[in-house]
Image (cartoon, rainbow over all chains, first blue to last red; front, side, top):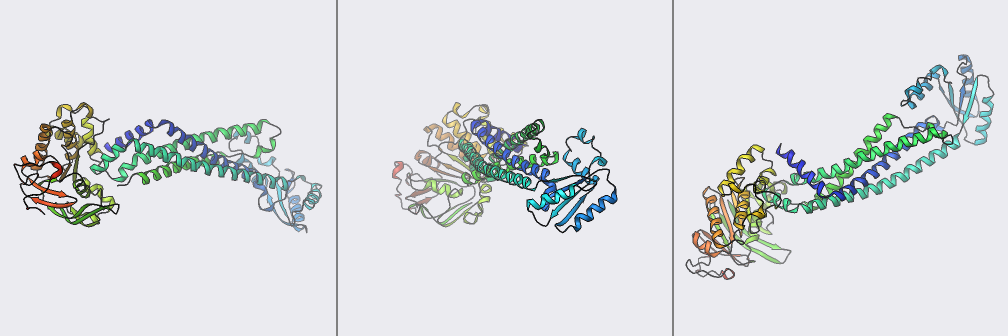
Length: 297
Length: 245
């Protein structure tokens, strides 16, 4: 009991004594981990939106929801035996509904208006060659078939978007590494200042036989709290950003294309978890450095 | 309780602070460590608390060979050693009670122990009425008694005092030494490094004299300069009676 009270008291005293540096450290951590969160969310969003274009899929043939099952099979056979087509993958209405319900997990009222029967079954098609002309001519061929509702191509745009997202992620990652470094240094310094302010206490503690870990603990705890506070603020900022961006996409017609770029709640939970943990790790790292540098027997 | 075997301490490869000293202090002894400034008294005390490591030779304190002591065990050694300094080393932001309680708190003693031990030790040093005062509201002698209380509150086997009367007037010095004497009578081994010849001469306890890091005299019931009734200046503590070395 006396121990817990001691640690709480000392840690709080340290934070209070050193408010400006503490704030600088916390805010740097917050911005850094927010960037981590953004990068993560960008990855999730592009992944969610571009899921169906995985594995070399170049175009998708959507069929009329009321299509006769025998027609589906006939079309499948024709696609499969086509000399220019490597392989195909079939998605039934139910499977399509599964995907939609995943993406709309956050909008149950919208999802309620969708029924599996209303969704078109589809074939995802991987042609032997990725030449744009060939893909266009294939798409045009199948667009005319009975029972086909539409054929969507879009490989080039998809590749462009994917490149854009991955370079965005790269920049964000780089920035967050830089900020993580800055955060570690700031926390290192703020812990060092705290130790300097308490050097008399530390001297007495060593004198009367307090263990190193006991002496270090309040400082480590302080660094961890800096990191935790930064992590939480960063996660909140990432949440606000997510809501803002999604709002922007849904209001604007120009950006309508991005509407499929959503982050689901479970993915966002992961983002929050990762950002907070990243903050705590940064805090622990900075304070551990300081403690090992300045607190030897 | 404390044993030095041919101990030499060289600082930074040059200064020979302690040179080939062998010394054995038994449990319950009261020992004055005397000698001019720079003779190695403080280094001797720092070697005992493991703040410094001997360059050569071996030191045993409270049954532990310090050269073989893991650094993580050093704090546990220090719990058996109380230390008192010339400058008191009290924490100005804490009251008398808190200063003493701090020593128990930081080695993880339970609340109950702290609540009973601290008032008891403050009564022993005669400061039971000043528990809520801050160090700067006390006289030098009172401050030093707080620091003795802090050093002794955990009932250590050994009490080391480095010039504890250095900042005190003669009467106060006398009081402090008699406090250390009382502590010694509880069975605690006391080693006191001092310049204060009046006290050394009055107490008639074992005297170990150092000069240039060498042990030059070691006598039971000794005096500061070696001759009881004839004091010498602190910086001229040459042995004269030849009983030393």
